[in-house]
Image (cartoon, rainbow, N blue to C red; front, top):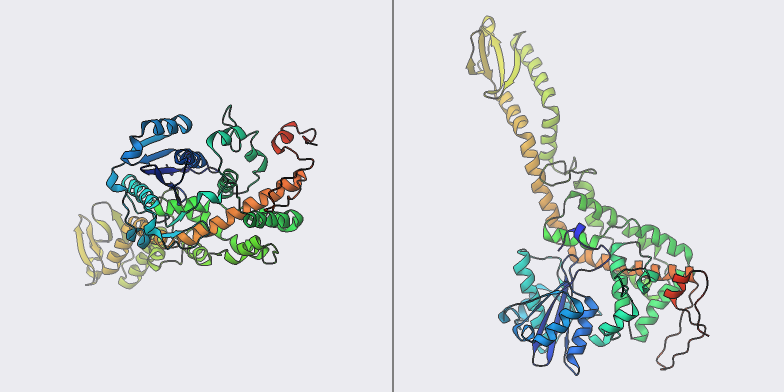
Length: 496
């Protein structure tokens, strides 16, 4: 599903493919509303238990599998029992090991955005990716331009949490009623954007285990917590940014309308402001965000000069293209609004040139526009008048000038709607070619949003920054339980 009203704006909607061969697995997962596409493979010991962990990590709404996986009734039964999603079987030939086509069409990287060179050695993950892409192609019937970057990650990058641990820790939802209140997400989520809301769920669900990665995040949160002015300015800008990640998905799907474009424009308009706010950042993570944030000025300028500020709801009813963007649109708009004025001016001009004082310009649905002259004035009719209809009391004529006005006025509205629709599709197509840049900017905005959320919570709850190292020692003094403490609200819940 990709319709906004059917999706939780702060939650990803994943579809997963599982490819099984022997005791090994390849996994691919995608949110087609955002274009997120990730994959991994499991080749070790306790493989099915690890597979369950990965399924629990994403909690997909739907799973497709190859024949061997689908016929593993006990394993499929356990997935259904614990996740409760729809599982279907896809033909084995869809799970191909073709790497060349993948590399031609997609950017394939590791979880640090580095290109992967040994793809031909990863048959399990390649099969899972090809199977999922084929299924998406079969069901969606269009080219999914926003699915352009496939990240193949290593399961050891994140802390391994089995499905029971995730459920009992109540990280994202309560066991009893699946609600958010009383979870770690409930405590930590003060995000300002839908994109940040989805990312904070992923960060909580996928705890980092690399000390350097953890400390980079902590340093960024520390700077944002300490520098209240910086944090406040960032949050103020973030609150005005729409869900450009899902808007890019709608553009790729071909169902983004003019109002979506305005939402994209107003969001992109905030990016230079965000970048400027971050220019003096000290922490590595915030400095990297500053360096990598694309302001997308060309996209803003295209929408600004082309789309009206209050467009129609649909793109097939006109009222989309701004005056000055296209010369023919301007003429047609002028024709539809000023047609009566032109006819009055033409009538006055013809009276003066011919000397026929009672000449009049009229219209009927059968004959269209005409110049009517009474019998007493027929001798004054010039040769350039072409007879159109004979009446009892006179004649009706057409001229080349009136014919051109007729063509312009009668067809102007219909032509205008058709032309605006055509131009809008062209604009949307131009923007669709920039989807990877939009997605990258969306990811950076989401990251910044989550870091600010952590800093806000740290400030509100007076949390301390931990020292994280590889010593192997865990030392906690006066540790506080964030969820219980917030539920109690009246006092600290502290271990001595």
